[in-house]
Amino acid sequence: MDEALVTRLKGIYEDLHRHPELSFEEHRTAGIVTEWLNDLGLEVRAGLGETGVVGVLRNGPGATVLLRADMDALPLQEATGLPYASEVDGVAHGCGHDVHVTCLLGATATLVATKADWSGTLVVVFQPAEEVLQGASRMLADDLFEQVPRPDVVLGQHVAPLPAGVIGLRSGPSFAATNSLRVTMYGAGGHGSRPETTIDPVVMAAATVLRLQGVVAREVAATDVAVVTVGALQAGTKSNIIPDEAQLLMSVRTYDPHVRDSVRAGITRIVNAEAQASGATREPLVEDLESSPAVVNDADAVARVHHALGAVVGADRIVDPGLVTGSEDVGVLAAGADAPLVFWLLGGADPAHFAEAQGPEDIQRIAADLPSNHSPLFAPVQDPTLEVGVSALVAAARAWLEAT
Ligand code: ZN
Ligand code: ZN
Image (tube, rainbow, N blue to C red; front, side):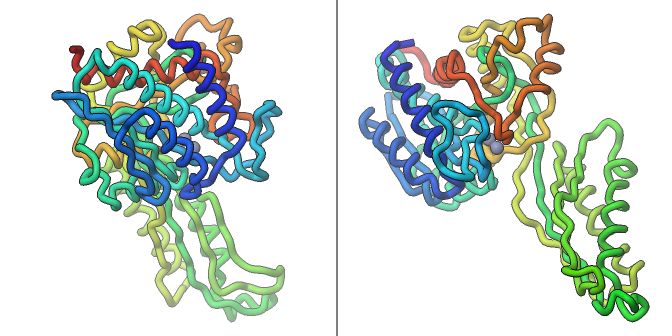
């Protein structure tokens, strides 16, 4: 790749990393993106889904390809000690979305510089608020696909603790669907010394948490995958006051809509039954908070991308990362466009950690011990992550944009 471009991209990456912005607050990042796309001569629309930016390059007849990067950072105190560590207290690019933005800027510049070699339409989407799983749907709500051409394929990548230079790609379900729930259980409070005069929501909630463990263990087939986690349980203020209510926050991960629906139904059934068992006089309130469908990679499109990425990193450096229980809202864009999706993992870990690896299983084992996304220590290396990330996006896009 062009040395001058790589140097500029590293500067942009370090700048973005120093100045992380939370979901829907990516104003500075969006400004940098807008300026870059304007300089390259794309049609640019900003402010889609609050802070999203889209660029379009119409370059003759042929397919329309959408390349997507997310822009937001996390409420996290960075502890990497990098010279370009976050300068914003309590906010950090701990998920590597700064890598995604940088690589897509580089890929756009590369495709513009080589536009005599291909024909078709390029749509680049810089999405806000992936971390809260709302950015993609907010862009659709702002009529994204009325404002830009509807793509024939949606492509994107996520940096992960695989070795830099390695790409993780699989066909079919890849990232889990997520459903967050808030459950409020109603008791009747009173003095801690006279529990017989109360309906204790603490006991009700505690019993519910334990019983919920049976949903995955007893109701989901061994051949299916699901996770039910109660991440928060809140009730009461003082040792001798029985409170009026208790609240549970839950996260559900699944890959199959049927499993998701049966797990959801199991949760409601147990919550209601435990409230009844406690003698509650009011039904619990079960509220659906954020959700996102599973990322399902299209088999035919994956075959095309696999071939294209093999030419970038070597076919033996594309590994199957297995099912990722993390979630992503990139699938919402593909569903909104009614287009196939291919979303891959971009290795970002220092290859030196993997010197002893003998094969793909060793890679997975070593990767599991490295600081992962959302860790305060997550620190992708710039070389060769950025270059590979740019080349991967360009090669995958060119698999649809016909050579002239
Ligand atoms: Zn994340
Ligand atoms: Zn992420």
